[in-house]
Image (cartoon, rainbow, N blue to C red; front, top):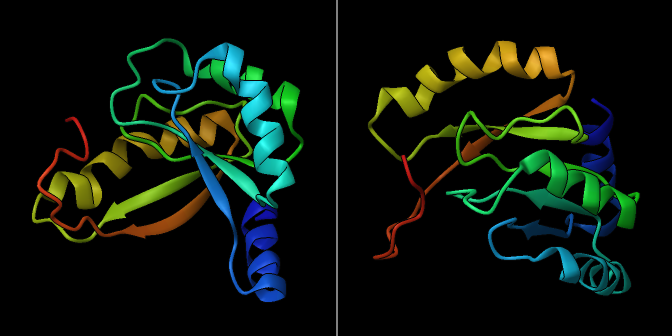
Length: 140
């Protein structure tokens, strides 16, 4: 509950938590440091890490690189159950509540739960609503 409590305290103090999504497919290694420093100067409270496809490489290598640059919380925003790492501080335990596919409502949770427990990262229960935008928002 450490990261969850940090987020709740931040919201209580500021009215909101300012989190930036870092997508390993879109942020090259050479740009991680400068981007993190820019975000910290802008008052960011933590970082979400994830992407729909994760085509560019290893999630753990990316998290290690980000951890070198910041002490702020790193929270995985998973696009699939393959995006779990013990190097993160927490993971959003997403429930897609705007769809009809029971696999996304509970099925993936059954598979992911033991992986998250084994990784010893803090799960943060999160309701996730997708709004039609006309573009693909995730890959299954």
